[in-house]
Image (cartoon, rainbow, N blue to C red; front, side):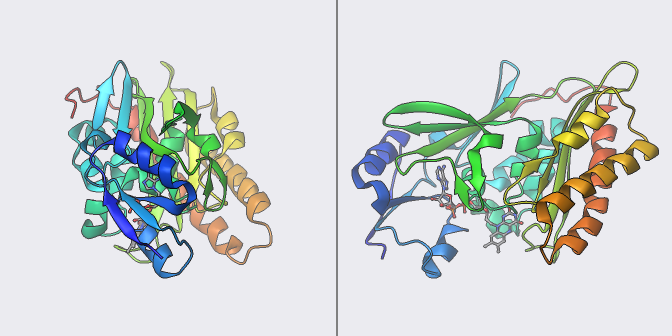
Length: 295
Ligand SMILES: Cc1cc2nc3c(=O)[nH]c(=O)nc-3n(C[C@H](O)[C@H](O)[C@H](O)COP(=O)(O)OP(=O)(O)OC[C@H]3O[C@@H](n4cnc5c(N)ncnc54)[C@H](O)[C@@H]3O)c2cc1C
C-alpha cells in the first residue's frame, strides 16, 4: 500500500529518494498508467515519487543538430511545439493522437516509454528516429539506444534507482520526413491497436537513402522492421514497391504473432497504417525547406 507521495522539485531529490527507498519507491509522472496499475494491485510501492513539477525535466530543445525532449514533457507540450509540428510531423501527430485532451495534458513521454507497453504511441516515432534514452542514477548517467531499452512486454532496461531524464535524436535533414499513422478501436480514447511510423531520406535522384520503419502493437513492444528497411535502400518508393514492402511487413508480423487470435485482424490492418505512413513520409521528404523556428 502507498504510504506517502513525495513531490520532488529536482532530479537530485528524486535520485536521493530512489537510492534511499530502492524497491519500495516508484516514480509517478502523469499517473495515467500507474494509477490504474496501483488500483488493480499490480504494483505495491510504499513511496510514490511525483516528478510532475520538476521543471528541468520539461523541455524540447534543439542543439547542434540534435533534439532533446525532457522525460516529464507532456504530450500537450509536444503537440504545441511549432518546431516539431513543422519539421517532425510524425512525432507531433503521435502526441496529438494520445487519449483525450485531459490525458495529453498530464501524460508524459517518459511515462509512455517506461511503462513498456506495446501500444505506446510515442515509441514508434522515437524508434524511427533512432532515439537514445538518457537515464540517471546516483551511479551516473547512461545512454541506451531506445531499440535496446525494451526487453519484454512491460519490461524495460531500467533499475529501481534510475530515472529517465530525456530522449535525444538527430534533427531531420533536408529531403527527410517523419510520419505516423494509427488505427485505434475508438476515436478519442483508443489506446493504439496498431501504429506505424516511418522516417526516410531521399537522395538527389529520389531514391531512398535512409529509412527506419517502426510498428506499435505488432509485437511485445514497439519494433523496427529491418528486413523491410533493407528492401527500400537505394530503391524508389512508388505504388509497386509499397505493395512489395507491405508483403514483407506482413511476413514479419506473421512470424512474430503466429498463433495469436489477433493475427488476421493485424495483418489486414497494417495495410492501412503502413501505406499511409510511407506515403506521408515521402510527402514530407519532398517538401523544399525545413521550418527553422525552434521552440
Ligand atoms: C483513458 C486513457 C487513454 C490512453 N490513451 C493512450 C493512447 O492513445 N496512446 C498511448 O500511447 N497511451 C495511452 N494511454 C496510456 C498513458 O496515458 C500513456 O502511456 C502515458 O504516456 C503514461 O505517462 P504518465 O506520465 O501518465 O506515466 P505514469 O503513469 O506516471 O508512469 C508510468 C510508468 O512509467 C514510470 N515512469 C514515469 N516517468 C518516468 C521517468 N521519467 N523515469 C522512470 N520511470 C518513469 C512509472 O514509474 C510507471 O511505471 C491512455 C491512458 C488512459 C488512462
